[in-house]
Length: 120
Image (cartoon, rainbow, N blue to C red; front, side, top):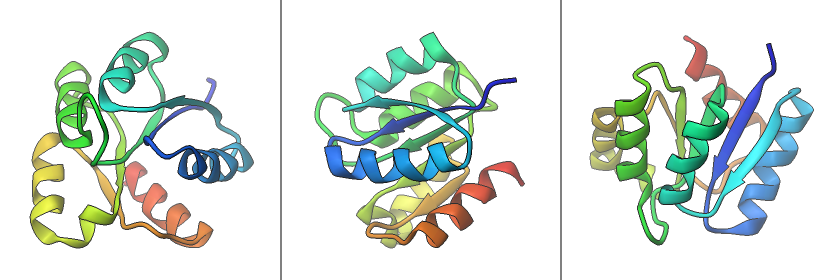
């Protein structure tokens, strides 16, 4: 089975950094600029995992996480945002369906550690 990842962030260099890590891990990576695009792409490609920013235009990451989780209750979503340093955002993320959290900025090792929690 192909390993597919959807990287959702409105900042191109963040998407590129995450893409590089995931490709090294053997994932085929797709990208979305905002939550609305992420929701459409999720339904189209049905990725194995999703990394999701919170603050984005059109539809923020918590709303997109909730919509994706409603569509697929087994979705593996890692919220990757500076906002997750605040406990209330982690609580809202869990309620929306996120399985793991990673504050920006992050190292490759920190990303891999948070990413591995998606499979627990």
